Length: 635
Ligand code: SF4
Ligand code: SF4
Image 1 (cartoon, helix red, strand yellow):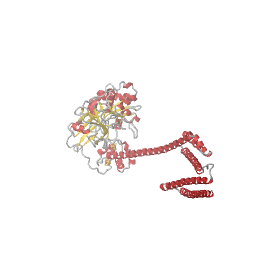
Image 2 (spheres, protein in one colour):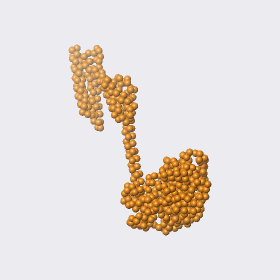
Image 3 (cartoon, helix red, strand yellow):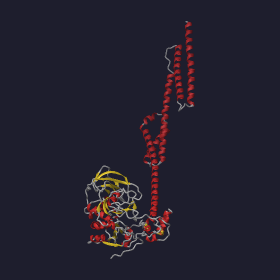
Image 4 (cartoon, helix red, strand yellow):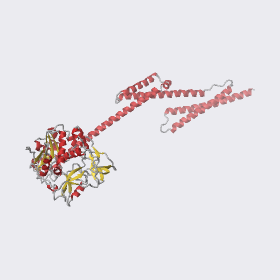
């Protein structure tokens, strides 16, 4: 006979389990639409791997696990994907979650089921990966991915949790009564993978049928079915471990650190269905109870709308809300359209007659009843004050996060203070602050990286430009040599090219190298431009000299020479006058960039020059005419 150990506190509320255990587990009908949330496990929600319009078979994967702390999601029945969008989700926040919406075809046709043959011969890691792919998670409420719990290196005790301590809930009880052989087969698989020294199955003594069925199924192996006293919350993992092994799991440690791992009976059942039958988790047993005509347990497809199930059980008039879970740890569904998840163990149609509203809270009288009831050995009244005063640091100091939110303190409080609500509020605020801090850290890191990237891009661009300029100079050495660039400039160009070449092999983040190369390249380009300009000006000067000073034809007399000279000067004067007029016109037309004073002086000078040349030309003509007349008179 095993010696049991007591845990601190606990309460014994009315059980209310008998209502739903009178009939066998039924199969819930297939609803017109299934809303399968992608968030079915702790950690990241699965990523949809189907699209709207796809036809799917029962058991086909519709969501891929996203990361290590995640598990796959499968089509609960055959049909068509009609939508993939956020939809009502079973969570106190009422926030929508991404769901794959399936319109069943009514055939409930399975896809190919592939059991894991010879799993005993496979490495444990392969078996764990298979279970993650089959969407196996803890069905006791925590939905922790099972493949992670199976990876504990060594184990003294494997605890199988069949306590089911919350009032009204009876799904595990019925599972053990009706499917004990499968549950024990699942325990065998888990035990083979984890190799514990002992395997203990804890069941509360208010479930004699389940205890008998499990004992019968365990015959021939060394599993021990242990009956534990009915006291809430003996189904809490830490409390059950304490009860069965005497081991305390201290604050901040996991039970595996103490050589103990705990699995719910429904979880090991799904392990067996997956490995031996190739069936992923597509349904679960749900207790339908409270103010309904036919309280009982049903096997419901994941994604079945909760209101569909309550209506199927016969919703009575006066139902004010539907609770998911038990009356101690459950919560009122913000939207009954939410689909059944792997965590949905019980739906209670609540009316004030069945579960009266809590009376208004009174001041704390420091009676200490809450501390006596707390299974985590906390001081609930102090936590309440800290949470109320928003002194979250102090609440954490007083082990707020050891609170399992069992509600035993609220249940016993004579002042009717909703203590658990305060703890949930405080935890939510702390998590929110943590989230905000992480988001701020991420944003800061993103900003810093962006700045670094911008700087890096700038430097790379400058380097590219310098390299291109240097390459151009290299490609045109002959044209350069014709320019009147002096030796100093040529040396500057060569230096720029060398610096650019060096910068290619140097660290891209070295800003001084790039800047120098850039500067040198700019200087070189300016020198080239200046040289080209000087060359052009020289050419023009030469041309204009040729035009204004033509060679005089041989054999002409002075008068003719003078006349020709005068004609040439007139032509030159006209040309200069025209140029001066053009320059002036351009200067006055260009308002955005008016001609500077130097340009204006040139124009004036040119005009004066023209006038003088005109006068000289006229004088030369007159003199030539006079000379001709004198010759005539002499003859
Ligand atoms: S049980 Fe209620 S009244 Fe008593 S000490 Fe705790 S919080 Fe205060
Ligand atoms: S809800 Fe928390 S503080 Fe209250 S009894 Fe349970 S564990 Fe203790």
